[in-house]
Image (cartoon, rainbow, N blue to C red):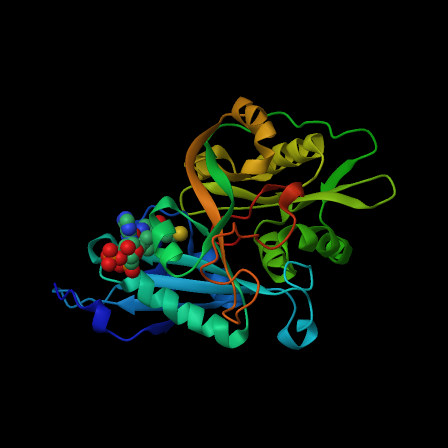
Length: 329
Ligand SMILES: CC(C)(COP(=O)(O)OP(=O)(O)OC[C@H]1O[C@@H](n2cnc3c(N)ncnc32)[C@H](O)[C@@H]1OP(=O)(O)O)[C@@H](O)C(=O)NCCC(=O)NCCS
């Protein structure tokens, strides 16, 4: 095997790379399928490294991707960091094939991505696995809050939970997008309507909102299929009962257990730990922790570089129950 991808050129990833990208993420037992990669590459920008193997093949052995969130640059230059008008980029799919690790490949692709984000004036945010944490810390990312992945094995959905009086759960309508954006952006920290639209398109029956009697939205949930397991998220609702009702409705709207034998993943925010017993009663079991990490845009302000103070991630996550997933934010 030629073990020199560290000298091969960094390649932009495009739609033609989706098959190889799925093979790379599957090699680490990650859950992304071709639809996930297609969505991320359509919304963002990816880079990869290939290695030439002894059998003549040149598989993708390392990847990194960035997803810009928030309005276009010209519309938002003055928006303060962390407000709904603000912009940042999600750093995603930092992954190196097992036999090519500790050669500096992740660092090389991460630096390429961060240089691009600096040019764009975009702060970087990501969700780190324990394995990725040290790579990011070395590049100036700092910890903010955390969440953990739980899995519910394939089994029939539980009965629906009735929402509190005056609240209705219903499918998301086309006319809901402005209200949904107004609800979601302050919690997430930026407008991510293009991503949410893509999720709704993939599984419309799992895109649900909670509406008060006056029509005001007070929660939403999206879900998608995955390579191994389905995933529910993001799920936003400040009220615990509304949040659980949305979760159970989303569970019912996913494919039959026989079609998704790996069950269902959720990524529960640590600050909503009070709802963990309810999730456990539904059959969710702990898998692994993640840390949301932040790096400034390199302009010398805000969450930049090597200050020892804890970082503040964009948004106000108090109402978030489930993140969309570490690859999406
Ligand atoms: C995390 C991962 C992407 C790192 O890729 P990599 O190409 O091996 O990383 P690098 O070679 O650039 O490592 C740079 C530095 O980070 C640190 N580092 C990387 N992997 C580490 C590990 N397993 N344990 C401790 N430190 C580690 C080291 O300081 C390393 O420098 P060194 O090798 O000179 O000591 C790779 O291990 C991987 O794909 N893991 C599984 C997927 C994953 O968890 N990705 C992170 C998603 S958030």
